[in-house]
Amino acid sequence: MNRIIIDSEAIRENYLKVKQWVSEHGASLTVVTKALCGHLGTLSALADMGVSSIADSRLQNLQEMTNQNLGFEKWFLRPPSQSQLKEVVSLTDVSLNTELGTVKKLNRTAAEMGMVHRVILMIELGDLREGILPGALVKLYNEVFQLDSIEVLGIGANLGCFSGTVPSVDQLMQLILYRELLELKFQKDLPVISAGSSVVLPFLLEGQVPSAINHFRVGEAILLGTDLINGGTIFGLRDDAFILEAEVIELKEKSLTPSGETLDEIAPFSAGEDRSPEDRTPGQRGYRAVVTVGGLDTDVSGLVPMNGYYQIAGTSSDVTVLNIGENPEGVKTGDTVSFKMGYSTMVRLMNNPYTDREMRHDL
Image (cartoon, rainbow, N blue to C red; front, top):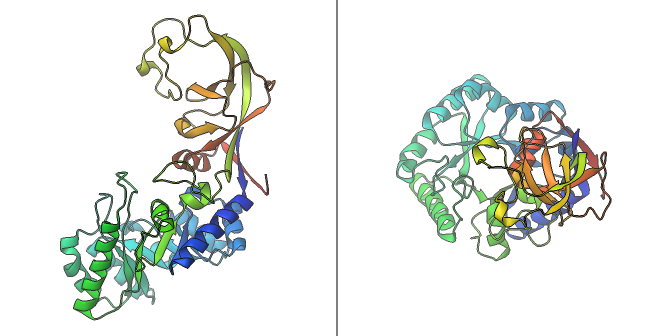
């Protein structure tokens, strides 16, 4: 069985560092927990660290947090589906919205429940995921502003979440100008501009984020330390909070080039080094370890062996093959190989029922 080792101390260090950066900017922080896939051990650890506000995109996870009375302010990260409006109002404090019809139905639902629901209006700034088109913003806000059971907390944007577009200071300034336009036209404060995220943190550290951006939604940088702009890990953060252990089920010295003709179509889960035989010396041999993680478990291309000498040769649905050279560490069957991982790989592993999760401290 594969196992993710979760180091709560590493998460705590990352959280406190990111919180410090955000606080020094005069902003507030909501921790994005969707990659945890509702893992109560890690969520409870976050509560113990003093995390007060979280954001998730699955109502089942938010329901479990409510059941466990973890005390978080809860944000719903994706625009609500109309089949779940009652749950959104009852389980969340804030939701991100882009559709006028949905906000009106949220208003009716909240009124029926005797509640007021807070919303952030998300504006399209070029990432082309979800967002209100700028030309429709004033008209939409005029209607939302008049809803009795909806409180518009502010405006926001998703940057670098879909198209891989690198955020710019100009985009952040556009958002600030939209807020100023709405406040002047309707004479009502919009206290929050929610546009900070993991991808914006490098700009924050360089002093490029305007002071009016006063709310950050950060997940990946806290969980994995990832620098989404420059690559690698953000200086001061840790990248070892989530480690995958996979068991070695075969170890043999083999040829490092396959026999016969190879076709990518035959190996749909292939991931790792170039499979071209010309990259290998004819007859070259080495030890290959077969481990118990494959394409059914996760995106293997996002796994990075912690032993920098090991190379992923490829994967199938059930296993991954590692080139481990002359095996100087004496790896044998039954041993485990440890991997760090990228965000999409981590999410799929955390959501995979075939993967165990174990909380540890100070690995």
